[in-house]
Image (cartoon, rainbow, N blue to C red; front, side, top):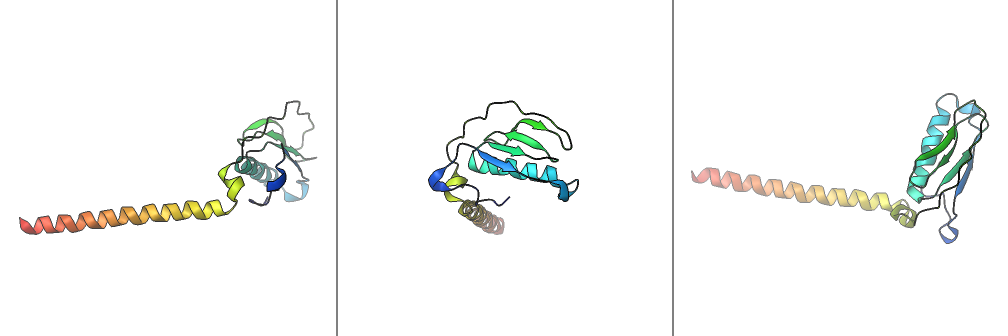
Length: 131
């Protein structure tokens, strides 16, 4: 569930196993937990095997794609090869610091664009005063 606390950096696994009992979460829980598992797969670039007795069981690729799944409250079997993990992502290397770096980059771009806009408005006012 918790982003940035999934994989031991020193011992990167080839896949993650996510067992869960979604029965007590009601109707909204299984879909939300599946989406969270997909996000962890994307963040870490590692496939996930999700097994539940009553939720949504699935094989999730390292890009977050559902390779196969068994719907909620149904029995079934997933018979597919577990794909290889991809190289570590920026997120898997730097964790939650990635969000801070991305936010800082957006702030810097916003300040640059604002300064350029304010500079252009001042130029337009000066030119308008000449005519």
